[in-house]
Every structure is written in C-alpha cells, then in structure tokens.
Length: 82
Length: 198
Image 1 (cartoon, each protein chain N blue to C red):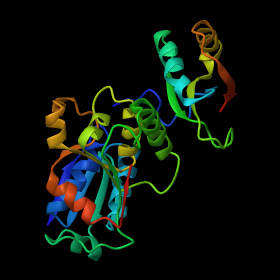
Image 2: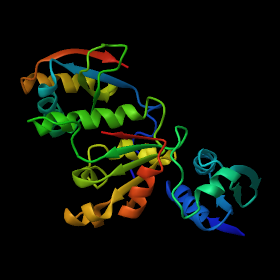
Image 3: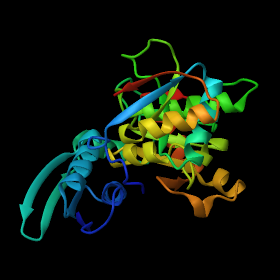
C-alpha cells in the first residue's frame, strides 16, 4: 500500500510536457535515475486538448528536473504548475 | 442473522473486503472500524450494493450496521442476476497494454494514463477484472499500483484472475485487490449492467 501521495492534496505538482509520447519513457527514466519522483499521466485537459502524456513531478523538484532533462538531451515542450 | 466484523486496526481496503465477503453469508453485518476513512469506504460500498447503512460512534469505535435491501437480497440468490442497464459497471482489463499495435510500449503508456484518469472522471467502475497479461498490473512494481490502491480505497472491487497469476508465477506478488477465479469473473461479467473492455 503506497501512502506517499494520498490524494495529492498537500503536495504541489508541476507537469513537464514532452513533444510526443515516445519521448516520455526516456524523460521518465532520466528523472528516475536522478532520484526524482515522477508519474507519467495524460496532459490535463485544461492545458491541451491533444491526447498527450506528460510527467508529473513535485513542484519543489522542478528546477532539478529541468537540469536533469537538459543533461539527458530530452527536449521538452513546456512546464506548467498544476 | 447478524455477522460482526471487527475491522479496527486493519488497513484499507480490508474493512471493505471483509464486509463485502460477510454480506455473501449474512443479511446484516455489523462492521466495527476505528477511523472515518474506513467508515466512509464501508458505507459507500454498502450503499452501492443497495444496502442500508446505520452508523453509530461509540467510545471504542465506529459501528457500521449494514442491512441488505430487497434488491441486494435477490442478487445473492445462486441464479445469476438478470442483466439490466442499471446494473454494476464492470471494467475488464485483459492486457497490460491498452489497445492493439506493434509497439507494446505505447500501449503501456496508455494504460498508465488510463488508470490515472480513472481517479478523476465519473462514473467509477464497481468492479475491475484483470486477466491474461492484465494481471501484471496488480502486483508489486506495477506502474499503476498507486492508482489501483486509491480506487480500492474508494470501494472499487478489484479482481485478478488466479489462473493467470499462477501462469506468470505472480500469486505471491499481488499487491492490490483479490485473487479471483473464473466463477466469480464470469458472474461479474454476465451480471454487469455494462462491461467495458480496455
């Protein structure tokens, strides 16, 4: 039983959008290897009507995550706080 | 006949599962829990099953009295329940990847997205049945375990095919829901108001 993110109400999140679904696993792997907790989720409806996927991270990890992805040469489309 | 379930100190989803199982055998079940979340989940499951719920908070716990309604008493007859539009919504997951295509990785991305989204949209399924390679989603290390845990805590019944778990050697690795058999799986599917296959 995981209890680290019960309901997600207390943790503030951001999502990192990638260009297409086939970039998502590479981005996820890079973040996980850097010890950053992330979850692959569909792009929230209010950000895009496209059926895209993105990586949800803790807002506190945002800067580190972007550095990690840059280093891993994963191109991203944008970052949004949710 | 009233059956008493002392679910104090038990983690979710045990109070819900024990109450549900007890309702198979008794028309009235008194479940004792020690927290509001468990009370809510037990009551929600019972109401969805057509039972009436009475709650009494005492010093030593919250007493949830669940009484089967006329409809739910009929449903536990050995004969399969008649199929009706208003019956349970059953989600069937026959694979660890959603849809068909040459790239399983894409299907796995879709599966993960689907189970995340399930927590944010309505209606919630009453039961989710995992079989064939779908059972890999209910075991330790599954990428959707967190989502399934939440659904289970909300009273969604999660069943995984025992034959399939055995085939994959995963019976000891189940992390959410119940190991089920073909009788239950067939009953849930045939008794569903609506079956949605992923």
